[in-house]
Image (tube, rainbow, N blue to C red; front, side, top):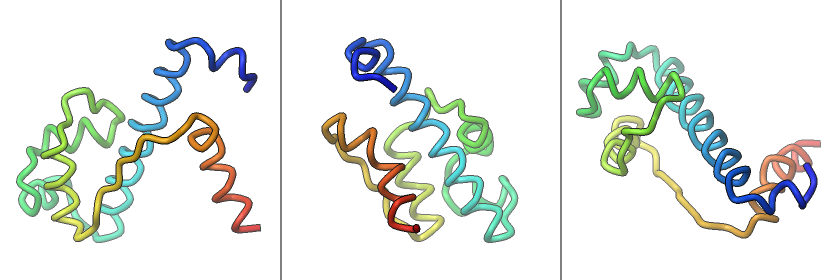
Length: 102
């Protein structure tokens, strides 16, 4: 992806939003299913409504709050990390992980 494309704020927003929502959807789904939990199980353990959990897992997380993330993290017994980073770090992050595996 060229640097000129990333100069457009709309493109940056779209890129960040899609990375955030699909990363969150995948993580919640995998953590839940690896534990053998249903959405209702996770709802009971976290205090989040089943509706919110379904939305998150479908990538529709516009109504998700920090409180929801903390509740889910508590149910999974994990932490939540949120960082603001320079664009160069944001764009390199997925590739750095892959390079370390090789």
